[in-house]
Image (cartoon, rainbow, N blue to C red; front, side, top):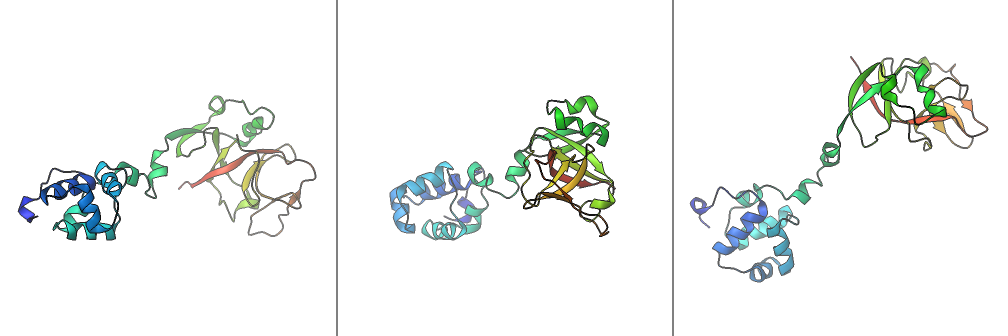
Length: 219
């Protein structure tokens, strides 16, 4: 297809494959035979179910006597766009997350139905798939290696089962503290430049308020 005959208003790769195929006088089965795929594969490309990969686009361009750049610059299908590295992140809604003080965070230990918005001292926008969250500023020398002072940590208070090595907000002695959970034996470990901070061993079930989902340095 001559460059000056290429339509400019076709937005998707599938649209462009269809246009070039028709201009070449081919049906879907004939095009499939030329590039070594099945007719349903061509139908899926043209309908936007998925897009051909770069090597297949090169074969299509040759089979259709069409510039590869013209085929490739069409918009990707919705299904292919959804596979991008940022797609899952961008789908998440921004949540206005309440920032609490430590004295209020302990309330969630005994009553997970506590409304964090009723206790909010401030808010910060956070993108996360978790929905039962609040945030705390961390100023704990026992955690300065992982969370320098004035790090804002978002806690998922619906998650009270930390994986081995996960950071969590716990209250082993009645007051909340952020620590790394370790199993076998159960213990809450510090993460500090100062070796004087020691693990807290837990014989019974750990008193977990929630697990860390996001940390944010505030400057």
